[in-house]
Image (cartoon, rainbow, N blue to C red; front, side):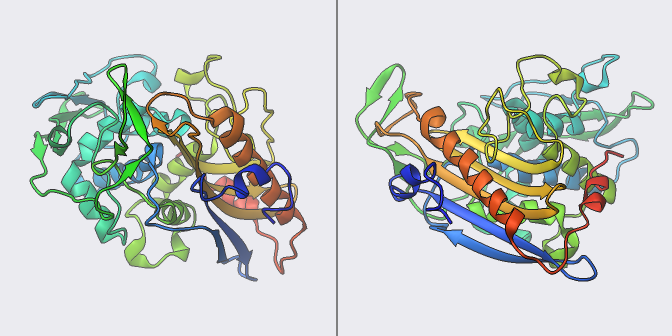
Length: 389
C-alpha cells in the first residue's frame, strides 16, 4: 500500500534515513457494534528514539483530569480558576485571571483546550507542574507504560529544575474561595532513560554557534509511538481496553477530551482562537498536511495529537468518515533533517514531512473506503459522545 502512491515514495524509499514508523489499525465492528482492532505496522521500533515533542500533551491532559477526580475536593473541577506560583529556579508564575470571558481564565479545562486545539506549550507546563514529575510517571507505569518518560517542561530548564514543581492554588468557581492548595514538590528519584544514552545528528546549534557533536536527548521526554496510539484508543474506546489500563474518568471527561481532540481552533467555539492566526488544519497533519488553504471535510472527524520538534514530525489519529462509513487509526512519525544539525531551524517540514503525512492519511482513507467489512460502524453514536457536558 505504501508503494501505491508516488507521493509516498521519496520517504518510503529512504525510510531508514527518515526513521519512519507507522501504525495502521483496522477497526471491525461485530453485530453488537463492539470494535475489534487489527494492527499493521511499518518499521515500528520502540528502541528507535524520536523526540515526542507535543505528543506528551495527551497523557498529561488525561492524567490532569484523573487527578481532579481523585482529589475529590468540593468546588474543585476542570472549571476552577487556578494560580501557579514560583518556588525554584526556572519556574514561572501564572496568576488568577478574572474575566467575563471564561475561556481566558486559567483552569485545567482551558489548559487542556489550549493543548489539544493548538498544542500550547505553556498550558502543558502548567499541567506538568500540577501533576508533579514523580506522580505523573508513576501513574504511567501503573497504566502499563513502564518505559514512558515525561520529565521536562517545554522551557530551557535543566534536569534538576524539571524535578521541582510549583505551588498551585485553586478557587471554587461558585464561591471564589480557595478550595485546594498544592504545595511545591520535588521528585527525588532520578528517572533514567530506558534506552540509555541517546544522541542524534552530527551537530547542534546553541548560543548562535554550531557545536560539532551530536545532540544529547538522554534527559529528554520519551514516549514510543505505540504508547500514544494505545492512549488515544483508550480515550476513544475505553470499554475495549482491559480495566487496569483504563483512565479513571467520567463519561463527561471522555466527552470533553474527544471534543477537543476532534475540533479545529475555529470549529471548537473556543473564543481565544477566533482570529486568523489559527486555521482549520493547524493541528491536522495526516490527511490535511497542516495546509492553511485546506478545506476541512465536515463528514470526516479526525481525533488526534501531533508533535513537531528537532526535525521530527508525528501524528497519532483516529479517523471516522461518515460518508463512507469507515473508521480506522493511523499513527506515524518521521525525521526530516537533511543537514543533520539539531536546533538550526532548517528542517524539511513543509517540503517533505507534512506532504508525506498528508498523502499517507489520504491513501489509507481511500483504501478504507473500499475495504470490505461485515458491519458498518454506527458513527453517529460516536459523534454524539464527543459533546461537551
